[in-house]
Each structure stands twice: as C-alpha cells, then as structure tokens.
Length: 111
Image (cartoon, rainbow, N blue to C red; front, side):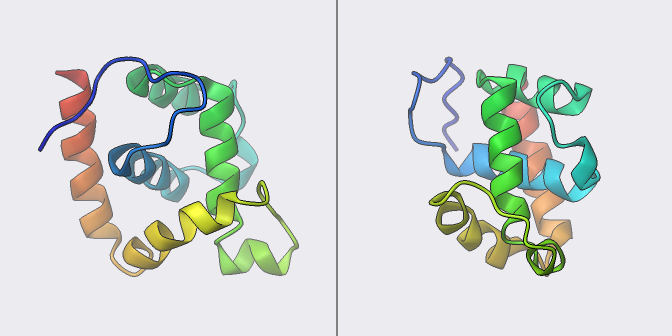
C-alpha cells in the first residue's frame, strides 16, 4: 500500500487514506468539537500535511452525511457531501473496519 507522505499542494484532491482518517476522527469526536483549533483536528492535519481548516471542513462534510445531523439541517460545502457519502456508506455500518484501516494509515503516515 503506497501512502504519499509529502505535504499536498493547496487544493489537491484528498486521498482515500486521508478520507478514511478524517471519517474515523468524525466518529470519535462530538460535532461541537469539529473546529480547526481542536487538538485532535490539529494533530490529524499535521499528520496528513493538511491545514486544520481543511480537516475541519471535511469533518463538516461528513456531518452532512450523518442522518441525525441532516435532520437538524446541518450542511457542509455544496460538493462535500457528494465526495464524503461513498465513505460514509462504506463504513457507517462497519466501524471496526474503519478503525482498523485508519490505524494502519495513521502508522503509515507517521513512518
């Protein structure tokens, strides 16, 4: 499995590995903590070479996939849900697989 560990260029597409890491974080922290200065957001951003703001936005995009939050009319960026929904659909009912993959990717990014 190849993981790119260099800092992505601004605006570069998110990798599958990055999306899984962010979804895993989404599943672990309350919605009210999904902001750029929250320590876990900053830590993940640093690990991936992304800005904390972009990680927080991606967390918000995942929130737009969450049926409970959608009922509260919580939305992410217009195209964000479209990008996040396939990951949500793949892993929402299988959080153990999500956690295992995220742990592998975390270690690969740290290497």
